[in-house]
Length: 424
Ligand SMILES: Cc1ncc(COP(=O)(O)O)c(C=O)c1O
Figure 1 (tube, protein in one colour):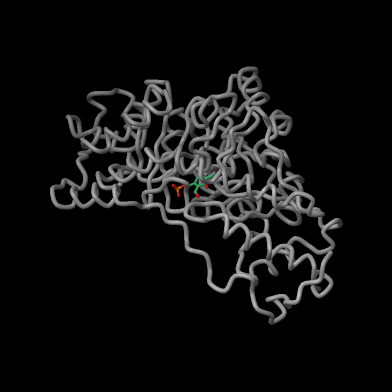
Figure 2 (cartoon, helix red, strand yellow):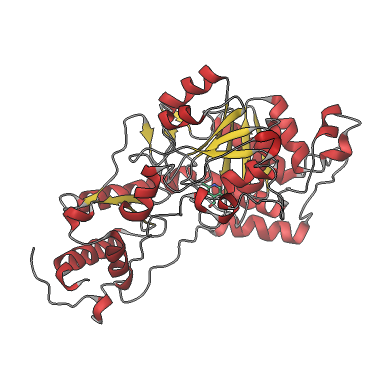
């Protein structure tokens, strides 16, 4: 490898990037115009948690939901104030509760298993595939018991899980599939939109996502009954028992989206394809630039998948690289290009699972009616290996980043690898 003149920033040299890159921010003139208009005219929300025409919210909430129905060719869309609450809505919609188990991946945001716990059911972790970072159907099958009601799939980093294996498995064991599609709006599997492949799918619009409205989520489904239960969960369904008898059997809440958020979100939704194409173009450029770099592995994408790259995932082979993943990440971060050390710790290692205490000092629901779970370190070896040694990502390809920014990232990487002997 050629020697460069500069010293590594981590050792006191000048960083490749002198000024940090702009934080991705996607709000444009159209978003500002709709929000300004609404601020002048109101109402900021148009929900009432009681029977009547306000139960389903105001003009913008309904319009956003109609836009989802149209774009993703689903029968129903229900907006929520976050994906976290929409994920809980999905569990409520399916009638999953105490005594039930739901299989979840350990490599996802904690909102996925928390949605299960919030309704008194128990998450059971299955391992992931190293190429997709999503649930491995073989590991899922081993985790199925008589209590299993659903598989909670997280379509991670911008592509779907291996539905070719997961759908037949769900059919065989009569399980429902919920897609946590917070990170993969616009992705496709065999031409089908991510989020619409399972029984229920959930999208997120928090401030890090590829389309965003500060906070916000939408649940989609083709099932009328699930959609109604989600609406009851979202808006004080307990008050509608006179209209819908089953409303008396669930705990409603206020998970409502504001009119402001809905208006903003609808404009963002109309920019989904544009933003996705821009990101994919940068990803293609970055992928080419990384070709042939020893120890840096660009995850393969199968022909079945249209990946939307919420983040750009990479794995490293520490032996070939000659330094550890963490050393590489520290050196790159010092050069001005932050990368992650392994995404999130496998979720079963969180204290809530290690202590099996979710509701104060009780062990409910973990000990409900003789239930037992194994949350010990070692249960998902692929996830643990990725988290500890192999996985890293950059958010470099998000709007409004450019090819120039990618060039700077690649220069930093080459510099770090050329000077790896100077690293501990
Ligand atoms: C996979 C996944 N699920 C759920 C969530 C929760 O989304 P929200 O912040 O909209 O509640 C996130 C957010 O980061 C996520 O990445």
